Length: 344
Image (cartoon, rainbow, N blue to C red):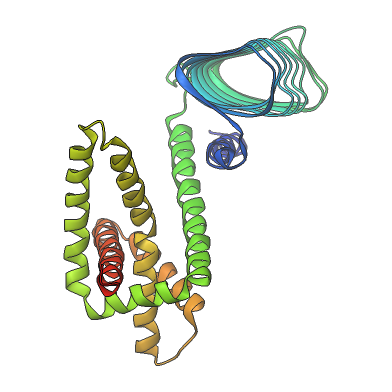
């Protein structure tokens, strides 16, 4: 019978990796991408990288990686978060390691905990705690685990010195190295945390937008109330026309900067679309309830409700599509009306 503690731990791996991948771009100062990345000079900032392979041949502060092969030959001062085919660590990591990969080799000491999910996981250095799952898990004889070790694998070897508790879930001959239920839980947790972070991120963005641009916000909501169907049509037409213009500008050397400016503006519009629809929904709800709660609280109520509607199977996706087109169209029409009123 599956150990629920182990499953929860690997769901936690997915949550931490997701948080690392989503939050790191905000604070990181060194972003890398490419087929073959080589870090040959010390980096005092957090590295956010993706690509075919990356070899770290100089000390770095921290690493968040997604790609094919990651090889670390020099110390990492803080955390390492990685998803890849092959992950090989040949130098110390200061705090924690969270990794998912096909082949994981940890040949050095880790200052905090190790959480690893892979086809094969080999640990040859020292660490405080380790939770590892895979087809095979090997803890070398030179390894010292100062606290606890949790292993879930169809085949395992442990010659390590474990000063705390050792918990083992060994698969039977009919089981695979990866527990499908566990992987499903990890994927589900990954998607859930992305949705939660996105919800709160857009909620905060909407509140800031209402606070900074109350007049523009009110004008957009007014457009939605007065020109509901036209806004929806304008949203569809705006995206189609905008994409066509982007392609036309892209094929001309002179128009390339304008093409990317147009794309940037369209992406901003799409990011704001559900926020604007939420504001409109909040206005409707206030009218139905016959109670005024203010711009910000009206937006919050409407945004929360439409996001709840998005969760309805099948119908939620249709509501989301309508919301995007409607919000984008409200923005387009409001900007067009503002431009027309200038008399330009």
